[in-house]
Image (cartoon, rainbow, N blue to C red; front, side):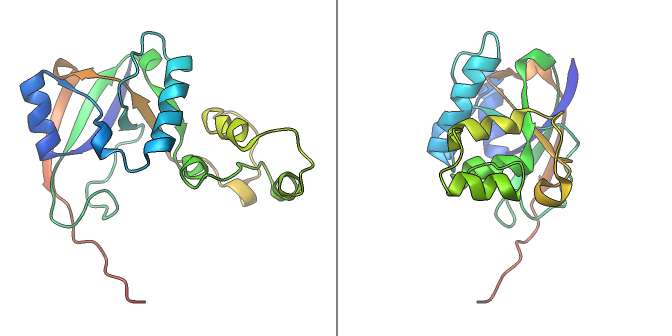
Length: 177
C-alpha cells in the first residue's frame, strides 16, 4: 500500500461523491491521443485495470500554492489516498512530456542524433516506454534526475480517500510577448 495525492477541481470531487468513486473523464483529457497511449500501457501493466480514463496521481505531496495546476481562482481539492501499489502505474513526470510532445525519448545526445539520422532500430513509441523504467541509468545533464514521479490508476472508490483539502488556485502568471 502507498500514499498518493491527486489535485482535482471541486466540481470533479462533488461528482465523485455522488457516484461513490473518482474516475477520469475523457472530455477533460488535454492530450487525447497521448492519454490513449497511457491507457494502453495501463492495460498491459496493471492487473485488473478495466480501461477507464486515468486518474493522475502524485507520488510526493503536491504543493497547492503552485500556479501550474489549474486556471486562476479555480475551486480545487487535494485528495490523499491509500492505494495498492499494484494498481498504480508510476512514471517520470518530466519524461512524460516526451510523449506529450510526440518526441523520441533519447537516453543521450548521441542517441537523439542517431535516431534523427535513421541509424536506430527503435521507434519513437518504443522509446516512450522508458518513462516507466525508474531505475535505469540516466545522463543527468541530458535527462535530469527524474525527481518528479507521477502515477496513474483507474477508478478509485471514495472510501479510499483519507483526506480532502480545499483550496483556490493562485492567479496564473501573465506573460507579455
